[in-house]
Amino acid sequence: MKLTAGSQRLFYLNIRQTHNPTKERRHTVMNMALTQHTVLEISGKMPSQEQVWIIHGAYKIGEFWEKIPNYKQRGQCGLCQSPESIEHILLDCDSLVSRTIWKAARDLWCSNLITFNNESGKKMTGKSRLFNILVLESAHLIWKLRCERTIKYKGIKEKFHSETEIYNKWLHVINTRLKFDRLLTDSKRYGKKALKVETVLKTWSGLLLHEDNLPDNWVHNTGVLVGMAPRRPPGRNR
Image 1: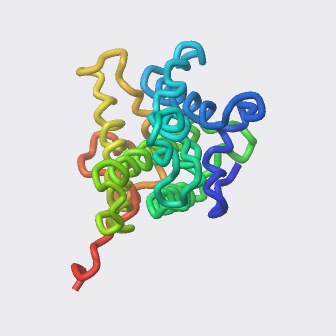
Image 2: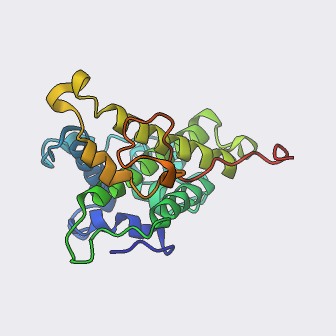
């Protein structure tokens, strides 16, 4: 499946296909899927739904506030006044944060016309891993910035993050993840738990800055970054 510049919901197609949203509340499904894939990424093992069921209702949003007298308004999205849920925050809310982050993730994915399958139709595990990284890191940052907007800045629009700030924060997150991937290949430090060099190469190759100038095995090179430049705030590019 090739990811195009269409709806941001395409990013979640791979997750949604494994669940039936008519049988469970959709935000619970999203929580469950994100948790399972995060644990899988870290440990290499997919936990069962029973093992991560504790996450159900863990976020104090939406329905949580409807049960508390005089706090019902907190269950509404501060931007569009819709009932707030994890799915709404990540997918449905037309906030500058979600628009900017999902567009950046799509642009990186599409920069080398990445697909999940090769020409023979075989699934490419490295690119599936990249997909999971982009989705999970992007979703976590959207949630983090939503909390800053709502709690730290108390909904004051003048203090909201600018598009440039949001983009640069996302780029920093992705480059940090790339750095950690490279560091985790250190077999002397991590032994059998070390990440395979081949896994890192298959995940990130084709997306790097000045990649033509890098060796075939660039994992141990310092300063390796994805091929997207940070943006300068207005007035600083003169």
